[in-house]
Every structure is written in structure tokens, then in C-alpha cells.
Amino acid sequence: MKTLMKKVTIVSLLILSSVILFSFNKSNENTNFKQDQPTECRYGQCRATAASTGNRCLHCVSNEGDSYCWQHK
Ligand SMILES: [Zn+2]
Image (cartoon, rainbow, N blue to C red; front, top):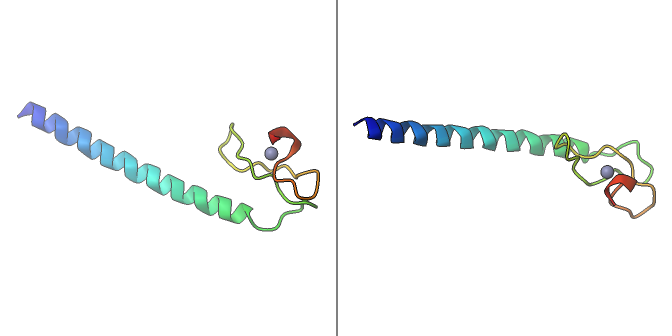
């Protein structure tokens, strides 16, 4: 009986964490969508994701037609 309880707890924890992860991804999408709006950049914003924060890189590209800033080339 104790084993069953343990299994049930683990399964509920798994479901709970997937729900949390799912909503987290959703809010991330929204953030990215906002950042896709026109920026101050002359040739557009870097399309890379900053490894430190997980957010989109805020640097501007230096040349027309470039997708990534000097840091993410
Ligand atoms: Zn960048």
C-alpha cells in the first residue's frame, strides 16, 4: 500500500512539473513575440538567445541582412 502511495505521489509531481514547464514556455513565447516588434536597431535585432538569461539577445546586428550580432556570429 505504501508503494502505491509513493507511485501516486511521483506521478502527481510529474504532472505538476509538466504543467509548470508548459506555462513557463507559454510566457516565454509571449516575451519573444513582444521582442519581435520593431526595435531601435538600424538593421534589426540579433536573433540569438542569450545563454545566461534565456531571453533573446538585445544587441543590434551591425550589417544589413545579418541575423546575429557580433557576439553570436
Ligand atoms: Zn546577439
